[in-house]
Amino acid sequence: MPVIIEKQYKNNSHLAVWQITESHDELQALLPSEILTDAELAGISHPQKQIEFFCSRLTIRHLANKLGIKYLGIRKDENGKPYLVGSEWQFSLTHTAGYIAVVMHESQSLGIDMEQPSEKLLRIARKFLSETERTDADSDLDKLCIYWSAKEALYKLYGKRKVIFIDNLLITPFQKDQQVINGRLKINDIDEQYAMIVEKIDKYYLVSVC
Ligand SMILES: CC(C)(COP(=O)(O)OP(=O)(O)OC[C@H]1O[C@@H](n2cnc3c(N)ncnc32)[C@H](O)[C@@H]1OP(=O)(O)O)[C@@H](O)C(=O)NCCC(=O)NCCS
Image (cartoon, rainbow, N blue to C red; front, side, top):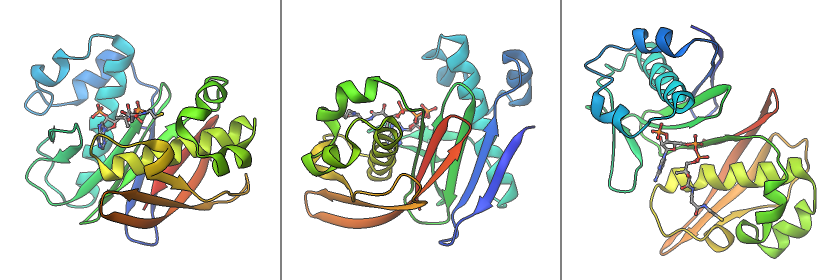
């Protein structure tokens, strides 16, 4: 079971990162059928997506077991935000082709996202960055990726639809090697600031709001 990173952040949230090395069948065999329901799998037809799905549930179960939470599966609310069945613990997850990352906290809402720098971010920068953020990121793919992941993580923390990335999710300009950046969620009557942790894992940037 290749959990490659496990740590506790200062605010008592817990992170686990799983590197995907197992085959589709090995992973399926690890998940008990009462947790991995056909209904959950029905919407995922692509084998690679199924692998990410299996691994994400195994990573959540791994963390839950470690923290003494009885893992009864996960469900999603009307916005698609996932929650643990029968527990008050909060979590957020992200998957890529190579890794799964999950953060959990006893009570606080969380957000996590993992992405790799890509040219695509240059093309969509105008859609997700404010003018100040765009000036700061310029054409630096690493910075664009950190901005994107940070905003996706804030989006997951909020968990509801109708979020305008340019206006509602704001990131204070930062240095590329900065390990903690500042995010702000400003929507309706909410205006909250968050410290966000930036980590590099392989070719990916992992940003966690916690
Ligand atoms: C939902 C979304 C955040 C997922 O991000 P992603 O990078 O595609 O995928 P990730 O692997 O990082 O995250 C997927 C997980 O996010 C979680 N997620 C989905 N909807 C969520 C929500 N509303 N709140 C919190 N978490 C959510 C799920 O757990 C999902 O994993 P699962 O399907 O296996 O349960 C993303 O697709 C999205 O909708 N973003 C906002 C849309 C938008 O407006 N973007 C354009 C801005 S210009």
